[in-house]
Image (cartoon, rainbow, N blue to C red; front, side, top):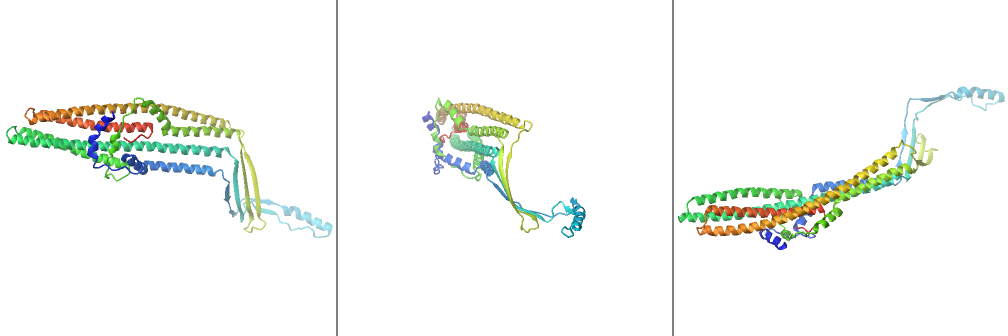
Length: 462
């Protein structure tokens, strides 16, 4: 089988040798270099990188909650009007003190005490302080940090999923571009053959061996090839533009041909179980779901801890407080130790625990479903690749027969033993066989890339 693959890629390799370039350092092939360039420059992947950075900052914020919070909180109040505190202290005490002075014969007690009439809203009052808060034990902070770590890991796994999709898109776009080059080469060869046929028929007509319709018929076939060449050029330009788009390059940038594509080898008959197992272990979708399951399990523990364990905190204030910014005899300090424990909240916490368990069960069920889907995807990709390999072998046999038939009929026609219509028919058959082989070759490469995509296991680039 390996010799067959070498043979069917021989024409493409020989034709593309003039464009072939060495692989960049650190890559196994030119296509690998393009894939790495696409992963570096792709805008979708850059967007995923921004999302990872955003989630990472959420983790930093969750970690910051473990540290004490210190704040400087000065306030200054001006007030006018509003409620007042009125108390007739003077009216009550002044007569009493006056009587006491008469009885003692001395002015020992004041008799001019004013009634109290104070504004409740403080005017010209300041509170300049430094506040500190610190959670000695808080289950919300602990589990929130662990949940954020799981979410970050899930986001990183999602980025690798996107990388796998981009890698597949770049590879298939590259194979499609190669197929357009091959089609262009096939049409060029067919055009050269028909041009030679036109010249041969013109000589036959000039020598009165054939009539003029053989020339016009050959020219008509040549015009059809010219039309197909225009379409082939359009397809080639479109395929190159799409490939450069995936690499975030100039759409008209040249694309080099990777000569190492001839090194494809078919898979063994017993490879399917190993590929399915490797896919289940390597697919980042399962890693992403696994981290989501871990976050859901942590949410269960968080709600269970909230229902059973109190939160303990310490806080304090230190600063100055009083009327006017004098700071004289205005200093104060306050230290607090607190505990928060919700003893009953109408079964809300029990409901939250049950809700978190349902979420975890849902994610676990999704994991089981995705595992089955991955195994099915690998099986389908495996048999599609196997069918593409068999189709390629069949097209090679068909091309060999078409080439031999064309040579026989061409020789007969030159010796006057075959009609022009027979030669044109076998020429079209050969052209069709060449195009079918080119498409089958591109199909094998695309199906191999699809198998690599569903297994998410880096395979040697064909």
